[in-house]
Amino acid sequence: MWRGAARRVLRGGGGGSPRAVSAAAAAQLRRRLESELEDIRGAGTWKSERVIASRQGPHVHLAGGGAGILNFCANNYLGLSSHPEVIRAAVEALEKFGTGLSSVRFICGTQSIHKDLEEKITRFHHREDAILYASCFDANAGIFETLLTSEDAVLSDELNHASIVDGIRLCKANKYRYKHVDMQDLEAKLQDAQKYRLRLVATDGAFSMDGDIAPLREICQLAQKYDALVFIDDCHGTGFLGPNGRGTDELLGVMDKVTIVNSTLGKALGGAAGGYTTGPKPLIDLLRQRSRPYLFSNSLPPPVVGCASKALDLLMESNAIAQSMAAKTQRFRSKMTAAGFTISGKDHPICPVMLGDARLAAVMAEDMLKRGIYVIGFSYPVVPKGRARIRVQISAVHSNEDIDRCVEAFTEVGRKRGALP
Ligand code: PLP
Image (cartoon, rainbow, N blue to C red; front, side, top):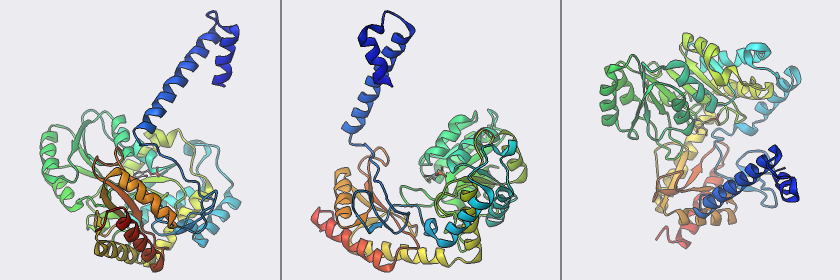
């Protein structure tokens, strides 16, 4: 379309007519975008997308060849994305409730399955109520603006997920950014924030780039001391951390001290899409009245609701799947450490293999794919300079043989590329 408009100008359609002006603007925009894209390529930070031609799972087919690739880079922690019962529940919901509502929740977009899922999420997290969103990104975009005003303060870990950062940007509260999991810094900032009406500490439960877990016990103690509330985004904890998979707050014994939990249905809980907030009933009621991503966006499609609902049923029946994932995580972490690699974090299925050098991370990830193992290298600006890594994510549906194959390939590639002696 832009090319067409530019051509019309070249053919003499110019002369200051509105069309010529917009064609010139379009051409200028095109040049600017191309130069920006070139800068991204030049900086070596271009993200290309591999195309998967099969279901998500421990073994995937890549488009254009590459069958039976071992996949270690999905957030499919419990392997529920392709679980037969989860798929069946999605199909049943599709048949009974249709493809979607063509509406937001408060007009005519609420079905019985939405209410049932909200009730299940509430029970799962032992909270008072829950509200669904199209994504956790939306849940994070909606919460801070609804809850906080310029009379309040929000204190956020510097490594919080982009969606928390954006959600906080949208609100008018006084903003503090404390150093990553640094309790001294958080305390200093809580002291400064005493002048405000309400203080909210916001943190990821588990941090997705490092596989480390927020010190929630200490955060809750500080919150108690300085009369603050605690919010967690538990996208990388819900479904598998803690004795019953309730999340980071259960793992650290502070379920009764964390006031608000936001999480996703798009990772461990079936992997389709969707997010939610769970917490005190009046907060959830207020979100339904005021939260913009909830009020002005379509309700979750029935098949998505069906599969998340079934995933929660499975997890509330038994924690065997989560335990199996924990055992495999342990196997990978201990074998890789014995092989001489440094794995960041502790006990979490996000296992970042720390390499330091960005090029090394990129070439090793390529070498791994040549050996049939799909992992991704992360470098600056996604992680700090000099802290490049390959992030491996373990799933309950990896077999012990899959884990061992991955460790063997890492060892071979690491030796070849000089990452191991
Ligand atoms: N919060 C964290 C910590 C995440 O890792 C993600 C997804 O990458 C999100 C929020 C967004 O979740 P969703 O995919 O449901 O929007």
